[in-house]
Length: 271
Image 1: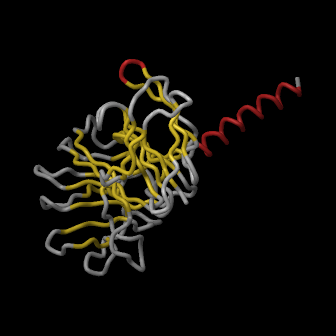
Image 2: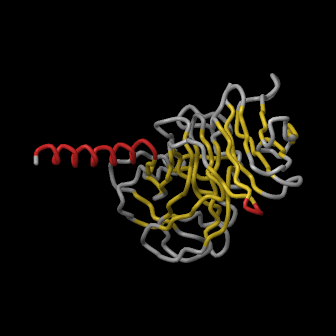
Image 3: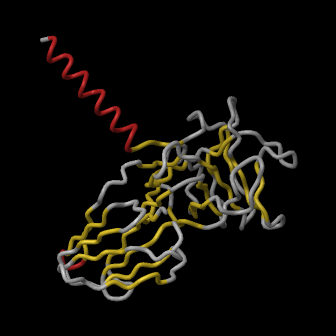
C-alpha cells in the first residue's frame, strides 16, 4: 500500500511540475477588480507589461476582465520602443491584434492569439486600443501594487506609466497572459492532408523542414521580407535552412504552398 501511495504522490508531482514547466498564467493583479479602467478617448491605448521568467516561451492567449460588452480591440506589442529607465522599452511593434466582443462582464474573458508568439528575451505588452463606444476593463488599485500599467495618449505621442507624477494613478490593469514553455516540435496540417514538421525550434545553426508533399516553401521575416525560397532536395521532401551570415536572429515565418498561400509556421532563429 505504501508503494502505491508514493506512486500516486509521484504522479501528482509530475503533473504539477509539467504544468509549471510548460504552461503558466502571468499576472500582477490580485484577482479583485476595484473599478473600471478606460481610455476615455478614442485613439488611446492601454497596456500591462509582462516579463516571462523563462526564455524562450510562446504567448498563447490573453485574459481580459471586461466591464462592458463594447468591442474589444485587443493588441499585443513588443517592448522594442523608446528605452525607459523605469520600465521596459515602450510598446512599439504590434505582434498581434484583433477584435472580439466580450461574452461576459466582471469575469475573465479569454482571447486566443492568431498564432502563438515566440518571446526570446525581454518583455511584452498586452492591452487594447480605445475605440467608440469605449471598452472598459477591470482595474486593481488595492495594495500591493506592481504599477505595470501604461497608456498612450495621442496628444502626447508617447507612452507613460499610470504611476507617473502627471497621472499618479497607482495599480494594474486586470490583464493576464497565458504562455507556454513547451517549444517542442509541433505537427500541423496543410490543405490536402499534408502534415509538416519543423525542428529544432528554436534553432541556432540550421533548421530541418520535412513534409510528405512536394510543396514550395518561402521563409520571410516578421516585416514580410522574403529571406529565402526553398525547393525539395535530393532526399525527397526534406528542406534544410541554414541562414546566411547576414540573417539576424529573430522570428521568421515559414509559408508552405504556392507563394504566400497555404500553411504558415512560426520559428525562432537564435545565433
